[in-house]
Image (tube, rainbow, N blue to C red):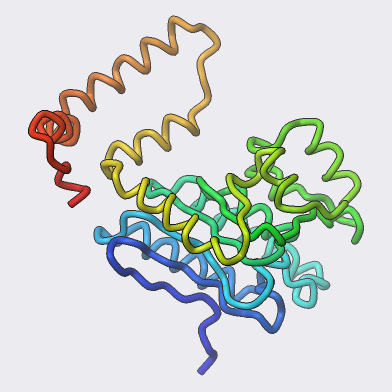
Length: 255
């Protein structure tokens, strides 16, 4: 029986998905991609999971595609076909997803970081879009990375493949926070607890709103947002939240 390379644990409303293939630096092998996608689906579908945390064992978060598996054209085509579904589920998950990096991310690994809602890294972590240096294009990951990055930085780092540190990653919008390694758990926990205060339906709708393209006309934007706002003010969560505020207690989802 093949050992599992990705693990899922749901405790106290937190679904922790752990990449556990340190021997190849958590590279995106076919098995790891498949298990990661399956565990994402399980976490998203679990009513007891409020927040998803994507983390890893070993010293590297993710080294990108498993190049040993990707040398053949057929294998590469399969990877290109499968990996977008992983990025899409991270990006579109109705539940907030937090990336926790205790080490470097490269190529596809950076794509996953960008697909998460919030990313926290050890200050010693490094990043690189190394694709051009092996003769390929960072095409698939551009779908999640480009909406995060400052345009000038995207051109520089995609074209040069230069390695950059966690502080630079914060500056250009790739990650939210870079902290010393001994503070990593605390910082991730801080974000997780803030996310747990949000109502599940409101969080899902807010994520959908953030992803949606905006109409060109401001009048159309206000019209769409008025409908969304009214639906939640009149909805079950909105009414419960306002009652809880008036009664000086926590709302039901934050108990």
